[in-house]
Image (tube, rainbow, N blue to C red; front, side, top):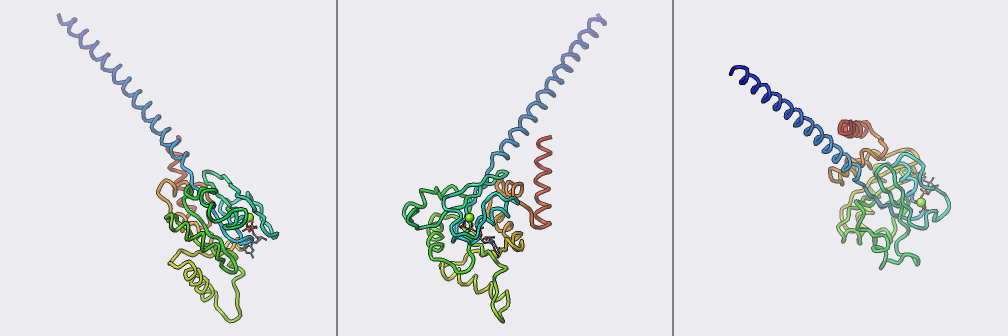
Length: 243
Ligand SMILES: Nc1nc2c(ncn2[C@@H]2O[C@H](COP(=O)(O)OP(=O)(O)OP(=O)(O)O)[C@@H](O)[C@H]2O)c(=O)[nH]1
Ligand SMILES: [Mg+2]
């Protein structure tokens, strides 16, 4: 009788143990699957940014600075980038848009030709005088509810006798705001000197949602210690999920 009871308990314990192990395996499998899904989701996120502005303003140069590699052709020749050019880099899609309202790309069809809806945000790149075509495209984007950041490039060329750089910046900013008719974000950069690229990154990050922000951090080149730290944090998080 005792032996029977003992054997009964033993088999119950064994069954429990096997069942427990099975459950543990199931949990590990499910956790691994969940992490893989999370990783796939993170990798599937894309940030799509379009740049527009006058020929020679420095759109191609900025694209190269953003990704930290020479992906776009830069040139002193006029209209180096005539058609739309798209660059894929580490989850970032950067699109160099051709001029707005030209014979080739009239205003009426520009929005649908380049599917402006699909962009997360747009950069209006200027240097020298601000142009009417940029104002008009901005206003179209504004009506669509699109975020457009103004980038005054060639900051290194901002110079006037007896006028401080702060005063020149402030005049430029005021001029853009006056032309577009509303307060807008204006960032100053110099691709030549590497100036302002940290602020440009910050401004872009501020205008993205959380998932896209992580993607931007992973894909874009760092120009400040803060950005580098954030980039490391995102990379660590990514690696710990992948491990
Ligand atoms: N001084 C100065 N020159 C710059 C800067 N950024 C770009 N350039 C120069 O300006 C010229 C035009 O630059 P791109 O980057 O080709 O300009 P883009 O807007 O792409 O021109 P398109 O393709 O013709 O529309 C090149 O000679 C660049 O080297 C800058 O910050 N400072
Ligand atoms: Mg170009």
